[in-house]
Length: 311
Length: 273
Image 1: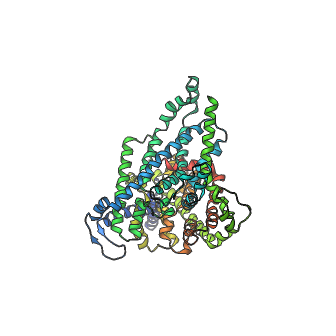
Image 2: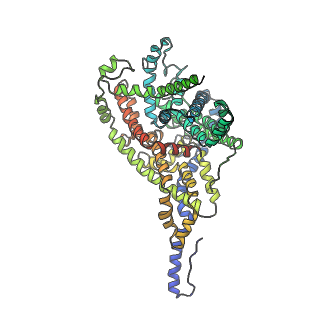
Image 3: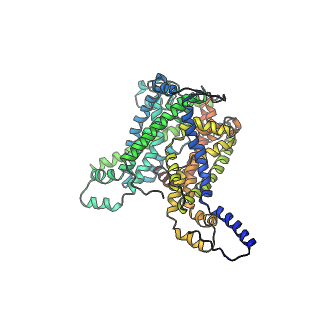
């Protein structure tokens, strides 16, 4: 495709000038010039950190002193055996369970809104909207909701469930459920819009044909919609697992990790930036990264990518 | 039977809408109440005076929200321009050139998309620190630009739909590679650029962790971190916190109302890759 016609018979000086122009031109033709910015950013802010992180994870380091002490596998042993660090893995189970509710709710509304519904766009907008909100704003909105004598308590009293009010964020037995509920409120809209998009990409004639054949709504769901969105649903489950391990903003903003709500990433943040144990925090991050990569690998195996390759 | 199903369907839709809107509505109520009113009334009681903007004024000045919005705008503008430039250039090279290690580079971008950014911050922080960028807006800008792989995907996908015959025609007319990028590809990429600007813009506006970690000094507060500051000293002054929360939410509402269709498309394009 690169076709420069160069005149062979030329005086030497002109030829030299032409060669200079040619190399300059070559330089502008090089694909490397165009990928370089992206590649440099990618290596500097993704690959070098991952490499460093693995290196740090085998050392004891406070992030300031010029030397680090080798620590062997100590950091990893601590992450997997110390009660404090093991506990944070369990906290993600709350968010994982919540993501099942989230996917179920999203699926239900995606299915009913894919059929003719009045005010369809309004409902769609309302259900999706929380996903767009600023995380700190969401945190404050729910801090206000869960306050003692706040909105939730008032509503419960109003419907006659007054005796069930409690310290929604203060009581370690329930704080994680409150936070997981906040997460459902915030992220259901994303799943919902993704499911709705997948359902709407199923051609309309299929429904019409089914209706002529006498299929009811349940048959349509079971035999047309469900197979059509299988891939996006499984993808959502995989994302739910890695997402529930990487929960950070909601607990950090709302409780700061108090009352037994410290998640894995909140713990890693504190270990690194408050207690300055970079090695230990790196070991936590590496463990999480390996876990997420394994999950993704399983996902690729279970759900081969049907769509186009990128080249 | 039909009627029951229809009723159940609309009841569930209305129920869900109430669950979404009530938490926001009560905060809106609180933001218009005076101190005494807030203490005397329940959260579900609407404010007496819907034009009481005193809390908004307090929140705006005490929270130094103007500075927050200015910083956010600056970071948004520079990192969006950077993302579009870096992303389209890379997609142009990968899609339109044949060169060695292309598959390897593509694979490197793919694998990086799997690394959750929040996990690597421990080590990324040391790198940003060694570059002397901590406590400057550049820390957020380079990180927003450097961690964005999804936009490169969107650009790549879109570029596949631009016929290569256009490039070849331009080349025959003597256009250089860069001219082709600048005059042929970039103008045709507008829809993809709009998608990236919208979804990336929302993500940057909402981002909390990066500015919180890298830009500690109060002069560098962005919208998220400025709002977060209310957690300490304003402890029980909920009417002020509510007003400030609303100040942060309102731009999102406006953007959503105007750009709904683009947002849905962008979210779907970005998340399923």
